[in-house]
Length: 498
Image (cartoon, rainbow, N blue to C red; front, side, top):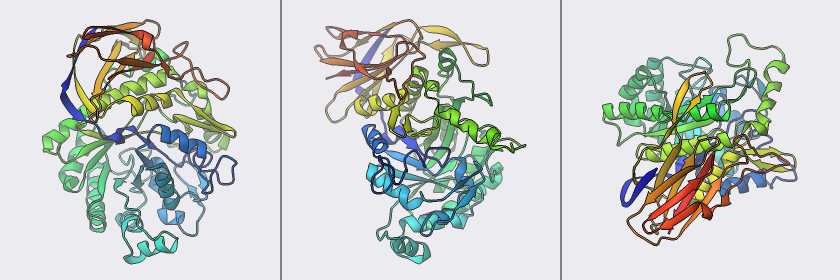
């Protein structure tokens, strides 16, 4: 496979928020994940220091919170000032609200990232949603800014990014809406919020459905800066059966379909310069919470609560997750002109890239994809053209034969110094691949970092850590203006050219 790189042809510039993360009040993400007051690994504010450090290493730019389905029955006022315990109807557990708005903002400030607040558009009202913005963004005016000040926070939080709702189109969501009522709710909510803070940027829950988006955009587009979409691919069912490596690779086929469809609608409305896509929930594996999103609810906790512990099985999160996630990030980078934010769901525990236990953390293979990309990949996507990748056949989880491109290549450039960084992914489980890159200049110094495992099913755990990046410069052979790279099977590679 031969590809030519043209560093002078910049296709688009990516927003660092495409490497964003997501945090929901589900299972052990908040309590036991990022927030453990009194624990030996927590700081004076109750935040786990090891998790903070890991998130700093991947330069986390933005965190979406508090959900997720959780938000559609979340009333933010019970999580500030004097805390009120509540029964969370989304996940059927008690939440003591000890981690609320003030703690979330403190966490983001300590981490150095943007907070992205998702609003209760399920059981919440337009006024409750805009009151939340008053609490966060007004200097001192009115009841809610005064409450923030009384709670010990004189300066406004100036939260820039807000999402109206979560998945309010879905039958599983508390307070689900039809397309017309949703569009009207977004219009009236955004109207009130923009009067609180005209500079805030608003997103609204959407999906790749023409009727939903036509109603939303024709009604409320003038007050929106973002449109939100979500995707999970591997739904494991009540028995928690994970897709095999090859089945996961089948999901990489047509990975940009949702982006293409939403882009098309934005173009049709002439909104492609005004509204960007926030892919603000994504992960290969859907979360495991059986007997919740069903008409008939399970009565015994053994049937709906205990099974969530299966999310903690680190052997589930293999090299397949890393390779898929790298393919997803390549897709987002190719579409960085329209996709300005993406949020891996979630960042810790459940299907997160970080797993916590009482003595420390495990960095799952997907974590190292974020570490490679945020450390090495450039901010400008540059032109790369040439041979198409060879195809190979895999069988999907549904039993269908799928022709998948074996190699995924994407070229970027660092605008500050011209360094070129190329992502090269070999999806094949057992065979190596060879890629020749042709450049316009000779004699560039190069280095390669590779992420793979001894097998495509390898994973990291408390007592094992085989899936980590390593220097692999021997994989690249330079000859004049050509560099030929041998890619190991089931691998994510980043080639840097100075």
